[in-house]
Amino acid sequence: MNTAIASLSDPLTLPRGPAWGNRIALAPLTNWQSHADGTLGDDEYRWLTMRGRGGFGMVMTCAAHVQAGGQGFPGQLGAWHDKHLPGLTRLAQGLHAGGAVSCLQLQHSGRRSDRALTGEQPVAPWDDAETGARALSTAEVEQLVQDFTAAAVRAERAGFHGVELHGAHGYLLAQFLDGEHNQRSDRYGGSFDNRVRILFELAEGIRAATGPQFQLGIRLSPERFGVTLPEALALAQRVLADGRFDFLDMSLWDCFKPPRDADHATQPLIAHFAALPRGGTRLGVAGKIMDAATARRCLESGADFVLVGRGAMLHHDFARRALADPDFRSAALPVTRAHLQAEGLGPSFLQYVTATWPNFVAAD
Image (cartoon, rainbow, N blue to C red; front, side, top):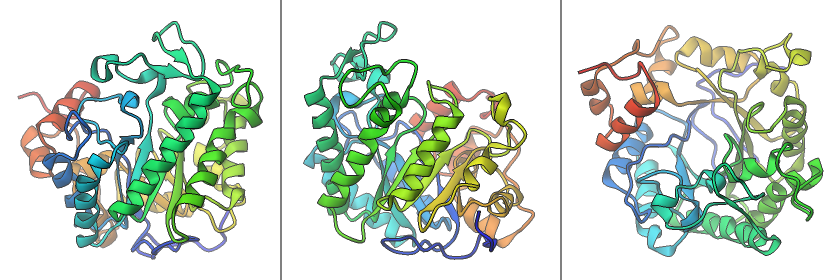
């Protein structure tokens, strides 16, 4: 754990690229606001650039899929073709104009891809009877590494300061980590070393293909989706020690909840990850950070920065407010549709939030 406790307002330096202006980042959030072909939509641009002007040190996009068949949501931003470059360039420029460091999250939904959107059979590390996904061949996994790398190169060409690999929440990269189901017989399954291999091949490929100041992060989540806490901690430690990642974004569901694993339940989740040695790699945490006090508590518990999701949906300027007022708290739920519209959520995002999160949007 770091011995000196940072303030939320302190700049955050990383091994590569520009320093972030403060310790509050926008978490990557699904929002359904781009076009069917993955090109940037105006509502997505407005939602993100409002946060760029809202004081966040770093603004991260929603998950942008790296293969056409990896789409998991309607209106999902894409990064799998050069046709996406004009929109991505516009978005990067808009974020920089607001003063934020920019990051494009890269993702593939794997077994959670939506055949109705892609017209393709979903793929996964294993044949999955539940979803009808078929197992990727070794050559297809190697192609996946190339396509993630190509998407990172597009992000750099568009002007983004960096990318984050989405290795959390049961999407394709996280599916490789699933010790219960990923029993592939090639180098990408079975043992822990094999299941995590793709992440480090991606780091190698992206580092080789992008400039020396391009930032690279990864999002991981503990527990759930076939990932145990001991393996999540072992992987986090490997990421922090690797030297190719600039930051680790731990999506903890609730930073201060005890782990499900009774053997580790004497401390909250954040404490387990904050205790890991990290060298120059920065540790961020996400999970129910809805006010300035909780954000400060995360730093006091050893995190280097926080990622705010729902609080940033409620307030485009959550960061600015939290930095200015130590007692700032997000608006109480539920909130009206008019409130969310004023904060930059378009009709599709409102539809997604209403369908996904009960008690977030007040009944009309």
